[in-house]
Length: 341
Image (cartoon, rainbow, N blue to C red; front, side, top):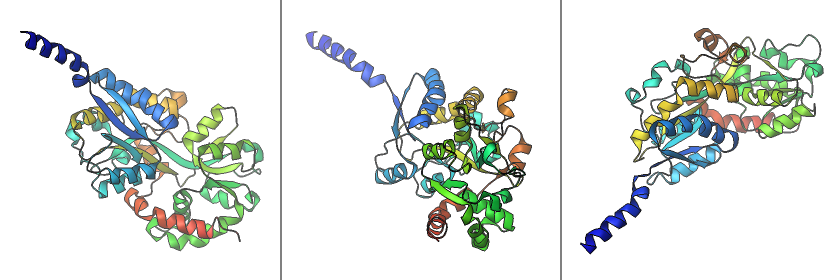
């Protein structure tokens, strides 16, 4: 009897640990980690009682770590960009998704269906942002062509970590497919005099704008809206050729022993109320079509809520091609655009 009592007592002590589950999510840190925690994770925990923990890091750092730990995966769900997600997919690091286990994916927009193993969580654009008081009269950026205006000499900044946006715009203006981007290099080189700086991250972009050092930028729409909320008069243009679409995505890590929970997490991410909250916080586009946004939010440039907007206002770089070409583009850009004359 004493032994039975001892066993029962021991089991009661072990019960909380044995029956509490945790889902591990790999994501960026900072505001994006908080975004996921406050919206998707909150909904998921409310529905399942399962807590969410995060491992955070840079996009490429986390990809490299996933390769190293493929036999003992550290996360159950991974957030990454659409094109880097293709590298996970091609390397067998993502499970192929069974869409029947994601009921909310019925409303997923076509532009967020990235691969058989990763789909969009939210969308944004890289486009032209500018300080109206600094820009010469008559330039309104209704076309990417306006960036080449001689009056903008020494006024432009762009990210040093991803030249794909301006490469895509140049190819579009030259009438060539982005696969043939080298046919547009003369166009790119003609823009060189207008560059003043290349920023390393969103904070650096904000600093260059706030001082007026680079009053015209190719920048992330979400960051532009954040800067605007801080009181800086930043205008966001959607050129007639389209703003360059970005989609941040999610996939289920190959080898997870919590696949069922991972599906529930992804389904929670596509819940229309969760998507509306993400749009409100980050000023990005919902990736499901059954979301209702207030007019003041839905009318913001770079937020897409109708099929027509998705079709006509976005310039889409094929995600798999982008994954394949990113290193080549960065090398060319570094050697030809960022180096001294």
